Amino acid sequence: MIISRTPLRVSFCGGGTDIDDFSKSSNNGGKVVSMAIDRHVYVTINPRFDNRIRVSYSSLEIVDSVDEIRHDLVRESMKLTGVESGIEITTIADIPGKGTGLGSSSTVTVGLLHALHHFCGRSVDKDQLADEACKIEIELLNQPIGRQDQYAAAFGGLNAINFSKEGVNVNPLTIPTETVSQIEDEFSLVYTGITRKASSVLSEKPIDYEEKVNRLNEIREQAEIAEKLLKIGDISKLGLLLNEAWINKRAISNSVSNDKIDSLYHKILDIGANGAKLVGAGGGGFFLVHGTPGLRNTLEKNLDEKYRIIPIKIDNTGSSIIHG
Image (cartoon, rainbow, N blue to C red):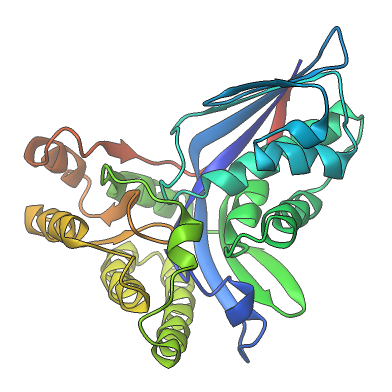
C-alpha cells in the first residue's frame, strides 16, 4: 500500500492575485503569502486482484475504466500518470468536505498525483506536482481558480509565492523559531459552519471589473507588506492586516460574505481578536483569526460550539509519501 500525506493551507494575504487573468496581465504579477498547516489529506493506493478500479471518498465507485470515474480529480490524475486499471484509491481528510477555504481540492489533486507517480515507480519533485495539479484543475477541468493552493500543498512551509506570465516562483520565508511559535500560539481557525466551492464564488460576476482590478492591486500590495512583517517578526501588525485584507476581499464580489458571516466577523473582533478574514475565495469555510495566546480559550467560551475553534501549526514537509 502507498500512502501520501499532503497539507492544507491558510493564506495571510494576496488571495485572488494568483488567478491567471490577473497575474498574467498585471505588470507586477500576483503574490500570495501563505502557510501550509498540520491538517492533511491522505491518499491511499493499493493494487487490486482484478483489473477494475475502486475509488472511495464520500462516495464509493467501482468501475471498469478510467473514463467511467465520476470523481474528476481522480479520473484526470489517473489519466495524466498513465494508471488505467487494477487499482484501489481512497482519500481521507483531517478536515473533511469541500468549501472550507483551506485549498482542499488542490491538496487532494497534489496528493493523488504524488501517490500515483510513486505507484508507477517514479520520483517527482514539488514543482512538477504543483504544475501537474494546476494543469488538471485549471486547464483540463476549466476551474476558475488560482495557482496558490497547488504550490502550498506541494511545497509546504511558509512562503511568499509569486505568479506571472513567466510562471510561479516559490520563495520560502526563513523566520526565527520564536516567530514560528508566536504564529502557532496566536493564530486560530474559526469554522463558520458554511461551505461553498471556491469555483462558484470566483466564477460569479464581480461588483465592477475596474473596481475588482484596483482591489486586487491593493491585495497584492498587502502581500508585500505581510512578507515584510513576517521577516521582522511583527505578528501583531500582521494580525491587524487581516482586517484590511478582508475589506478588500469583500469588495470584489457580493458572494464573498453575507449577513451571517459579517455578524460572526464582528463578534470575533468584539470578543477580543486583533484581526480576522475568511481564508480561500469566501462565502464560507474558516476565518483565520489573530489575537493573544489566550484568545483561543476566550473564543471557545463565548462562541456557540458549532463554530469550531482549531489551532494551527506549520507543516514544513509538503506533500510526502509516508508509506510504501
